[in-house]
Image (cartoon, rainbow, N blue to C red; front, side, top):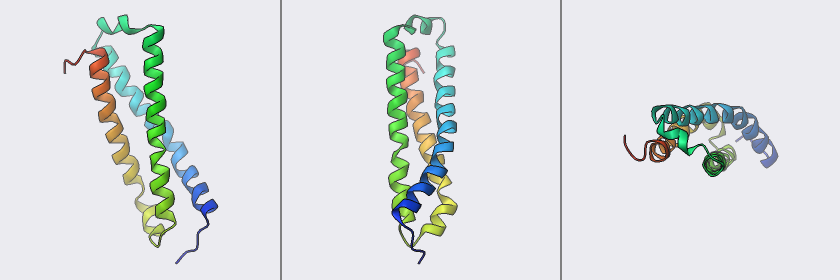
Amino acid sequence: MDATTFRESTSDAIRYWEPKRLLYNAVLTAVVVTYFVLGLPGSKSLVSLNGVLFVFLLAVLANVAYCAAYVVDIFAQNSEFRAQWRNYRWTLFAVGSLFAAILTRFWSLGIFLHGKP
């Protein structure tokens, strides 16, 4: 078994996940912008300080949720399955991003289209 220290697995997780955070945020931003545009002209009325702060709050919460990947990644890296995990952890990114995009879609529908799919 590959003896990996907590520091090594944490550093590896940061190197892997942080560059992907940009793609994650880009995907979620694209979903929000899409539904904002689909909701025009009514969605323009939501551009206010409170509206912008609410969207900012949701963005911060989405990034906090993204950090859940670290728990799974570091745990898996400190197991006997480290080598296999490092080859397939992209699936966690793909599934997590898809899940977040679906949640973002529903929130965006509710905010910009007032629940009208």
